[in-house]
Image 1 (cartoon, rainbow, N blue to C red):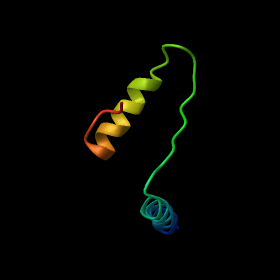
Image 2: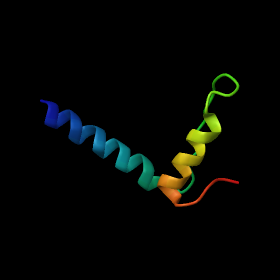
Image 3: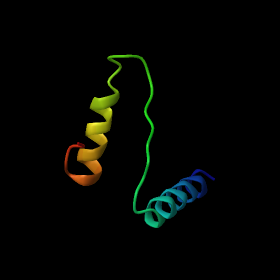
Image 4: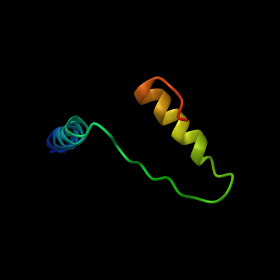
Length: 52
């Protein structure tokens, strides 16, 4: 049962990211909560470069 759920989630994520060339991701939280740090880390992991 867990394998079925894992395969389903993997398929959904692959389909979601394969179809879109641009992804919009919103981060919210209190000041100094690390939003920019997380955004930069995501950009580094996915694109290999910092945002901005």
